[in-house]
Length: 225
View 1 (cartoon, rainbow, N blue to C red):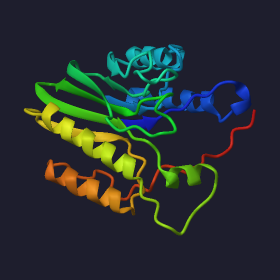
View 2 (view 1 turned 90 degrees about the vertical axis):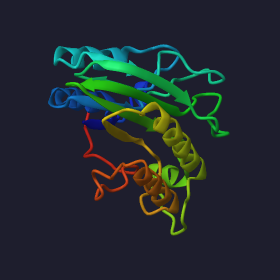
View 3 (view 1 turned 30 degrees about the vertical axis):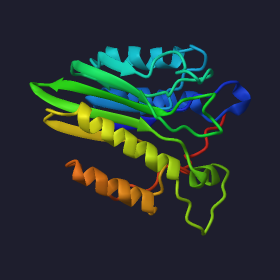
View 4 (view 1 turned 60 degrees about the vertical axis):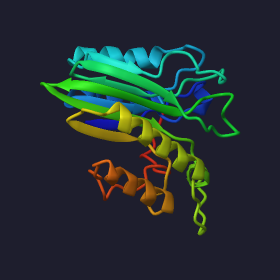
């Protein structure tokens, strides 16, 4: 299983090697059975990027998929949540959920939320939760190259994850395996992450990559045009 955050921005003056990133990702698709994507964001119904991903995945036998849709969830009017789950195995059921609490600075543009699916993996039910929460100050600071010695707790992202887990507990009833992944937007050394991790342990989940560093603020080697 792979989880990946994809971001494609237009126009070209906002160039961030998006097309190159997408090409690299599409070359890796065939290696996996289940893919959980974040930030495949569709602006005003323009879903060419999602179609490209789905077509390439289907070419490699990953023919089943569910996404957060083509159009924004009201009251947002600009973009979708950008979540997608792709699978080699049949999807038995799926559910989309927008968080009851949204940030004041983006609620009218995008509604953050989760995407859940139950898969039939050779006779075993596998429940998958793909989530993208609202970013906190630590993420924003990393994005502009700034750091702070102060603790930056993302309280909204924390509460959104709790809401996601409560709904996933019900959705995943009867599943043989459970998977939770996504863009949590929480610093791994924060109290919020530790608390969410304890809650996940209560649900029978464990961290499959405990040594993974925080993924926000990472920078790739530059791609020259």
